[in-house]
Image (tube, rainbow, N blue to C red; front, side, top):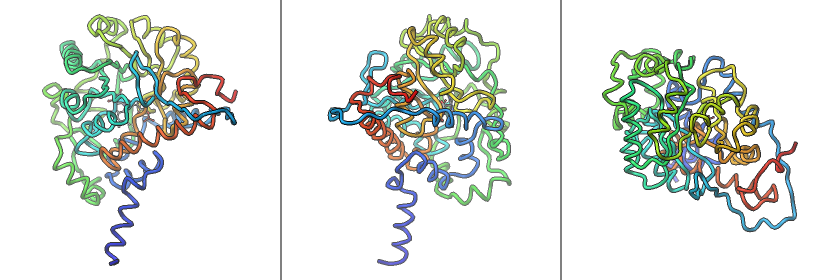
Length: 394
Ligand SMILES: Cc1cc2nc3c(=O)[nH]c(=O)nc-3n(C[C@H](O)[C@H](O)[C@H](O)COP(=O)(O)O)c2cc1C
C-alpha cells in the first residue's frame, strides 16, 4: 500500500462516519471541518456561556438506580407522542440555517430523522423552505414558529405549515431580543455571510466547506424570503433584531394562535412554573422546558435544575419535553425519569450534519437509540415508557 493511500485511509478514519462513536466525536469532527466562525456559531452561547455549562452540569448531577437479574430481553424504547407511536424518544430541536453546516441542510436532517423514527422540528429560520423540507419527508415533522414580523407573516407561516402537513406547532417564546453571542461578534459572523479579513485565512483552510457553500443554496432564512431582505451585513443577532423580532408580543398572541392552529401546540423556552402555567392557560398542549441551549442568556440555571418544578406545576395538563445539553442516550433516560415525555436536542444533530451530512445525523441518532437501549438494560427496565422517578438515585 502506498504512503498516500495510508494517509488517505487514516484521514478518512479520523473524520469519517466510522470515527463517530459519541456525540462528542461528531462535535470534534465538525470542528475540524467547519471554519471557526461557523463552528462557534453552533457551539457557542450567550454572554459568558454559563447556562451552556449549567445545562450539562445539571444533567451530570442526576444519577440513576441500576437493577440487575430481571428479564430485560424484550426492550422497547418507543413512546407515544400526541397519540402517535414514535420510535425514538428524541426530537430534533429547531435550529436555524442548517445549510451553513452542510449544503443539504434541513433536507438531509429530515431524511435522516425519518429513517430513525424521530420527529424533526423545523425552524422558522431554516435554510430551505418549510415546503421543500416537507416534500422530502413523508415522516413526522413539527414546525417551530417565532412570533417575528407582522401579523400577516405569522399567519401565513401557520397556514403554510398546516398545508404542508406539519403535525405540531412549536412557538418559541424566549427571543424577545436576540441574546448577545460574543463569539459571533468576535468572529464577524454575519448575515448575509461575509468572509472578512479576520476570518479569511481560517475559512480558506476549509476548502470542502467553501466548495459546499458555493454549491449550496444562499444562506438565508428561506421560509421568510421577501420578508427579511436586509443587505447590510451585520451580526446574526443584530440582523434578526433589526429585521424580524417583535418585542410587543404577549400571551394573548398565543391564545390567537391556539384559535388558528387545529393540531398540537407547544411552547418552547419555558424555564419557570409561572410561565408554564401561562402557556397551558393560553391553550398549549405541550411545554418544552428550555433555555435555548444557553444561547439567549447566561444567568439562568440548567434545564435539569428547574425541570421537575415545571412537571409538578403543569405535568397533569400538558406533555413536558426536556431540551438542553442532551449528549448521550442516558441523558434522555434521565429526562424521562424526571417526568419528561421525551427529550429534544439541537447541537447533537447539527454536529452530526456538519461531520457527515445525512449519514452523520443518522449516526448521531443511532448512537442515542443504542445508548437508551443499553441504559434501560442496566436499569433492569424493558420499556422506556415505564421509566419514572423510581429510576432516580434520590
Ligand atoms: C445553531 C443553532 C440554531 C438554533 N436555532 C433555533 C431556532 O431557530 N429556533 C429555536 O427555537 N431554537 C433554536 N436553537 C435552540 C435549539 O432549538 C435548542 O433549544 C438547543 O439547541 C438545545 O440545546 P442543545 O444544543 O444543548 O441540545 C438553535 C440552536 C442552535 C445550536
